[in-house]
Image: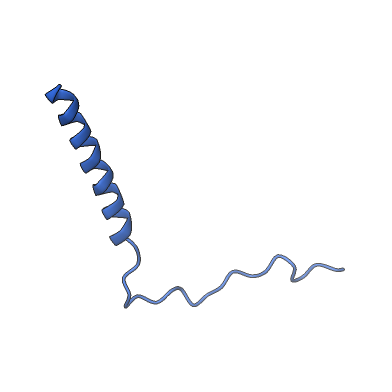
Length: 47
């Protein structure tokens, strides 16, 4: 029984680590997004 509890605790901590990692691994607030935008696909096509 203690093995099941240990496995459940391990799974919870792995899940919590993944959530924490994805929340704080993004772009930093002082970094600006790239200024160059992708051209639209509609430009240059005849209608």
